[in-house]
Amino acid sequence: MTAENLKMKGSLIILSFFAVGVLLGLFRWIPESWQNPQFSFAVLCALMFTVGLSIGNDPNSIKQFKSLNPRIIFLPIMTIAGTWAGVALASVFLKSLSLNDCLAVGSGFGYYSLSSILITQYKGVELGTIALLANIFREILTLLFAPLMVKYFGKFAPISAGGATTMDTTFPIIIRSSGKEYAIISIYHGFVMDFSVPFLVTLWCGV
Image 1 (cartoon, rainbow, N blue to C red):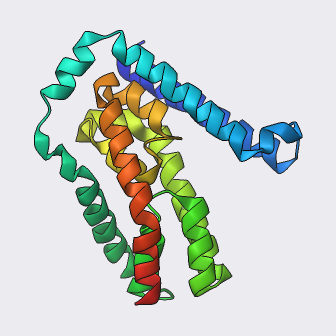
Image 2: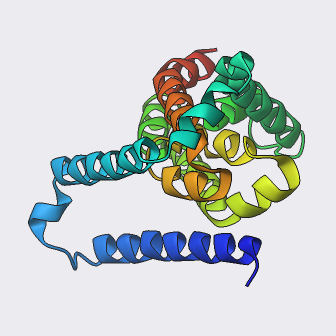
């Protein structure tokens, strides 16, 4: 089995766990204690700890990170610009939605829980639902196609595609596909994108 096939298999496994989690939550087949946000936070902390441990045990990861171009600090800006450009193009074919509405939806950058709530408050339930689905699809597509993104577009591609999710849900598949040396970049990118979502969504909703 080739390396690409192994990465794709890993993507499918991660996506399968996500799907199982959705079903368990939908049908309430999980303990009440697991539904506490603190439990999710604890799992995320454990994930970050294990990734940090693996990076620390591999001195080559630090060397490879130091060799990256300092301009990588602008990666979140390029993610925002690319997302807006794609959304603007899509808005041409979405006659029922204004450009500002489409840009508000796109500015969720995969952060579906927060962006959908904000858009629902400003624009109503219909656009809020569209935002929820659009940002969920962005996350799922990143989980599923990260190895192919790396193969055809480079190792930064799944990080940009993941948007605000690159420091949590899509983080494992990004590390598996792009390499452990991209872990710090992925966390930095996700943090900046997370921080930008409430401001940019509110901006486009208010225009």
